[in-house]
Length: 88
Image 1 (cartoon, rainbow, N blue to C red):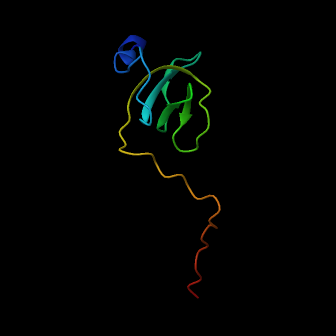
Image 2: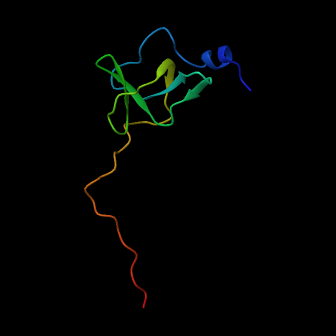
Image 3: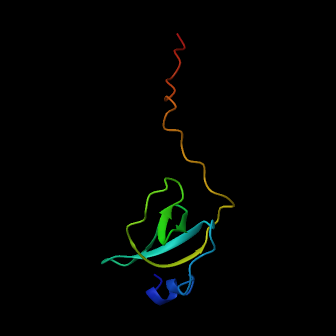
């Protein structure tokens, strides 16, 4: 298991990412460090969920470039769920 300092070495901790850049976040709570499971960005002085636009409520220790090329598409919440067709 990686130590806290080993995990921190993989992340940028001394500056914010460029504007519009989606990144992975390393956060910490009373249990230890963890990765946020979705791409995030820094906007208006806040960390933002790249999928929903919601603010991240966590203690962020550092960031690194995300493994995605662009902002992920958000699901269309107005689209009705498809129902299975009857084969009968």
